Length: 260
Length: 187
Ligand SMILES: [Fe+2]
Image 1: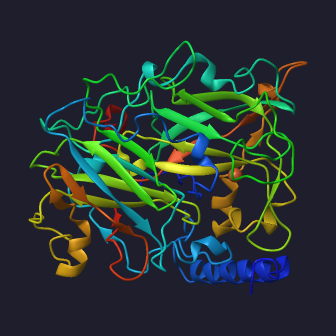
Image 2: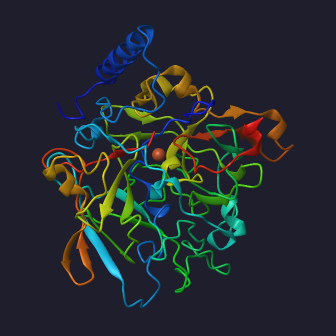
Image 3: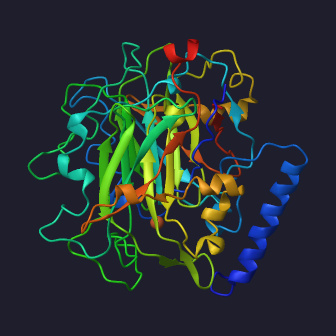
């Protein structure tokens, strides 16, 4: 079946089947999975792009290079990178927002001084990318790329515009809910994360095989930012808060707070 | 120990990272003109053996002196234009990032990793891949004792950056199927 014939009902039924299988396993005592399975076939591009052999656990090696990771500094970002509305001569169209939150490891420790990168479609749902052929207007005042370093509390902050939903060709009438792509580094390469942030209350959530690839509802909820009125600025912008927790073993640094 | 907080789930990098993640000199990890530069190159292929033209490959490694501390400056920026200056030509940051081209081809120019950690840690992102994959490009076929050394020879061979000529090593990544690359789990 070509993607043009594949209906939303068909994809939704496949999604429901996968979710039910996971719910059943959890009811029988399995741990709810945090990450999407790599063979989530309702997202058709995953079919030929996931390994069939099991991953090999190498978690016993304290000397592994991956327990350390790349570092970044003030030379790797510029002051304008965190404000996506000021990267061109004019102001971009759309609803101005700020997105802020903390980057933590699984022990709740802030990830300090690390690189946060984001990219997104403009307010009309169009990426500044040659291969994006969605017939929505490009905005000459918006590229949609941002970077910053986390501060001593692990905090990041961006000013941007709310991205639009956009169509894609997974199946007939497939639409992505509005989202911002994020890329994060921890203190160890094992903590690397690329993910997507969504906006609360989006009616497209149940139809989207990419969000629904996260099969556990509580885990999916962690991809949705919270509207935070205290972050909104009068007559200027709306505020969203989204905290990020990096998985994977962190570098085995001594942490005095843990020795209590 | 997994820790107390549940992690933020992974999501695919999608098809449109190309104007955001790659940066000038992303594959030029070795200081400019370094006499011991090694190019590691290869193709990324899917379960049909077709090239994956929209993958991102990141590499991380120890410096030749054994240090795993890394250095900033991989994305060194031009404060005048906001563009990328490329690395400063002296420091070894240990980090590389390149996108595959239309043939699924990628290459980084780096320095040989030290004997204690004789590999590039390789992280693969792609459209269609829900959660990135780790593998290693070893510079030795003598993998130290452990789960990787115990793999069948044919599987273990996928972890070798094969010497092709002086200063050139080949490391293909097959995400699925015949000669599928060995991918690693650190959890
Ligand atoms: Fe997207």
